[in-house]
Length: 171
Image (cartoon, rainbow, N blue to C red):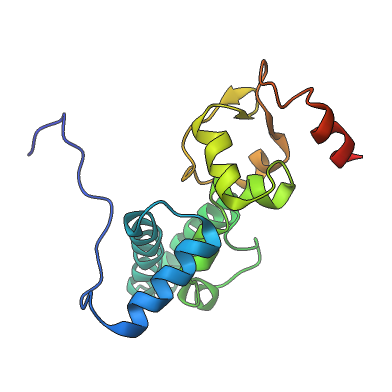
């Protein structure tokens, strides 16, 4: 069964870790999304692979069970903000790692303009300056749900909330 104090591994690394094209792609994504290490990229890649695997397994189901499971999977992905509500299984099979990386809190904080760079967004989150629905979140890899996206702001008591340079840049 396993030790409950030890969580199980959430990622699977590349099959061939020393291929030049894989290394270059990973470095490009790490720089673009401000990832700390390749493990964060592998976690996102593994999550996408699991969703795609579920979609592939569903294709062999009977039609009535397929419809139910398809609605559940697409509903989950739509609430995460990865796919629109009217998506199909083909859209699930077309998912890329960038779709998951765009839903990370770090990326959304940068794209909302709360930070000047993707690296500053990570620092603001880790230091506790960002909150969602009034709750402080200190994990840059937090996957933001679609309904939470509008409630991302600076935390109560954060010096960035009333900072004069930030107040001018928002106007």
